Amino acid sequence: MTDIIFSFDTEDFTSSRAADGILYEANLLKEEGVVGNFLLVGLLAKQLKKWGRDDVIEALSHHEIGTHTYGHTLHPMINEYTDIEDFYEAQKELIRQESLAIDYIKETFGVEKIYTACPPGNQKSYVAMYGYHKMGIPIYADTFCDTAEGTGAYYCNIFHVYYAFGIEWFLRDATDEQIKEKLDELAKREIAVIYTHPNMIIKSDFWDQLNYHKENLVPFGQWIEAEDLPAEITETVLKNMRKLIRFIKADPRFRIITYSKLTAELQKEGARVVKKEHIPEIYRSLKEDFFPIQSPMSLSLSDMLLACRDFLLGKNEHTCGDVFGFLSKPYEIEKPITVSANDIISACEQIKDNEFLPEKIKVGKEYIGPADYLYGALEVLLGAQSVDISPKQQLPCLDCMPEVRDSNFKGTWQHSDSFEDNFLSDRLRYQSWTMRIRPTSCKVKH
Image 1 (cartoon, rainbow, N blue to C red):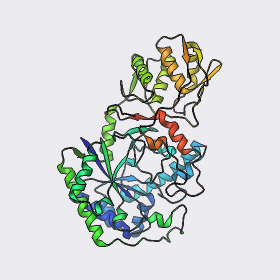
Image 2: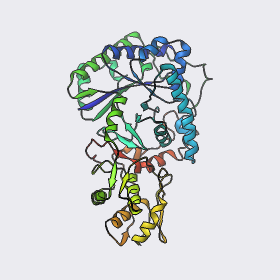
Image 3: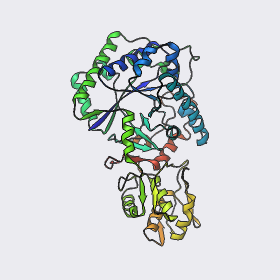
Image 4: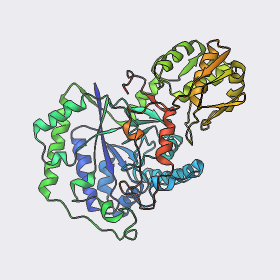
């Protein structure tokens, strides 16, 4: 069965008129007995109160509220201000701004828990992923850190789901047959997020294209509004949205859920405890494929490294917790070397909990990469007295996540011309050691 989530990027803080789109869609879902997920820009939550849009606030009380960041494309955007070398300084600013967004949301709607964060466009900052997790938000939506099958994946300690189907333009002229064909595609996924922007059933253009394209084009509060769409387009989209919902509700292949429901099901996984008896299976899996594993449980490469570290220190089990990747490219040896078991054991204290992993590890008089060390530690735990290490790739294959593999944010979307992407794309790939697949799913092809 495919889990369907209706997710609304609720963002236009420049136009009270555009907020009518929120009102219409929120009320439509309620009439159809569906709880939607409205992810609000913090500044919009503030503006709704300022505009006196109690009707919109009331309509949203039936639904789940998440965050769509503090200022969306207000510059500097998340990618712009987190693209610095000092991760901790970047995360401090991220948490400052995003906490303010959540304060606005809670003040306006009275919600106690935020289940979802959804940065806009291609704002895929690894800093934000770690930061939202640290803030207690369990799900990162509109990601490209997901599998092709839509299983969902953990990355930087937060669970990621992909936006599978955007409906605002599709529903302007979709036939019943086209809607059903699209549902056949979605039925192949485990999680299918259907998303839209409420402002785009009212306005002819995106608000940020007019006010925040590459820079803050106008003073705050002196915004340019796009023209309204013809009323018949709004009516057609709403009519077809109702039809889409009814088709889904009548189809046994689908179940409509919310992000909070997804969170509750993820929590059923419970604690993941790696035991020394699991070492042979882990070693066999990694020799076959240097990738996160599903058996004996869902484990990232970082989980496995930390477990080996604990076993080398004499512990009999390792309880998995937060994991981290690298801040620079992992080291690769240039020629084969041999290291002793004692040197592997002595080096394990270089690996720390709740810190980014070392890009290279000193073993005796030699430096080796983290993947070399993981394989060496497993062999020592299996009884080897020395380990032969050959040059190899230190990061897992990311063909199952091609947008992560190929990411390059410079010159894209609404980024300013001065934005360089000096760190974000590379460091996103370097966090692949934190990736693990949803434990209820079968192993992903990659």
